[in-house]
Image (cartoon, rainbow, N blue to C red; front, top):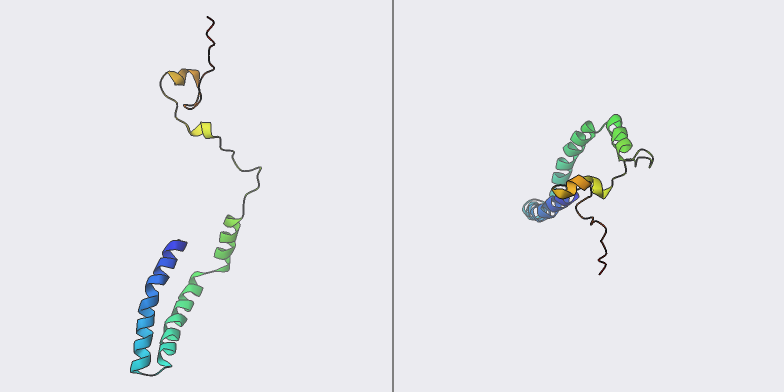
Length: 104
């Protein structure tokens, strides 16, 4: 999400610079500032109407790290699929049986 918003901002910056310079040379130096204010004020109103205190509190509650006692411990062997003759011995795929020593 951060990369997407950064990419959109970087792509929109040259367009805004071109439009601002065109407005400044065509009309007046203050015109780009008034145009930017005219665009940003409605965007602020729309964003403020979508953001509520309850929504912010819920987002903050979900972002807090959970205590260590409630987290489920993940073991790498739980995610390994065991097939074939190894399935009978219930060993994960990467684990080899103990070696038998040759006496001879």
